[in-house]
Image (tube, rainbow, N blue to C red; front, side, top):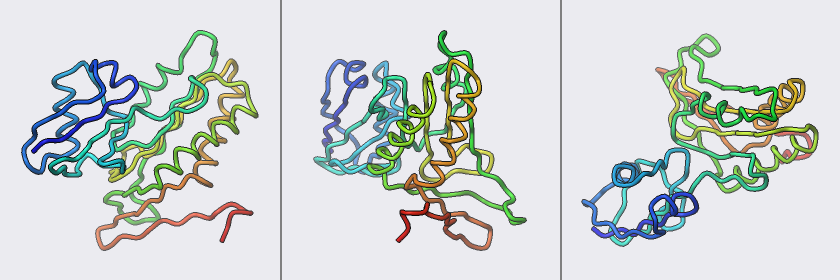
Length: 224
């Protein structure tokens, strides 16, 4: 089957063109195309997003004849010192700490939220995260704008996992650098609290004998 692949931003520059026409076996998945492109080009697509016919897609989604598959670099509106988004890939704190450790910044604070088991005395097999992606990207931008309005900061990264996350794996990563440590600590703590309050990402907790959605509480002034 024939599929068109669109590449944007840094991905387009790394490949040297923004559109590829591929012949693939029937039922090929987004993840298989990702692996194919990374094997053929000096390209790393992990951390970005994919869309099939302008709808966000997951690595396991199957393609069909005539589909248009787009690979989208991580969204980072506003300051060039921010990296924000949602991902199905594993989160690596070392990568982002290295990224945030620039000369002018005397402090780098990181937070890694991991899936715990047992939880409330019960074993957890895994969590499933679901999001409203387009709104989540805007909310992440809002949170970082709030942080920068309160503190003098260097680089800020906030990434949240989607899909299945197993015990011990990270579901959210926050890295903040600043000229001084008080600002870095305070801003990092602020970020995780705001994410828990307003980011449109939900989790379902799976136990050996069932599953349920974990519900929080909407902030005052925004409750239905």
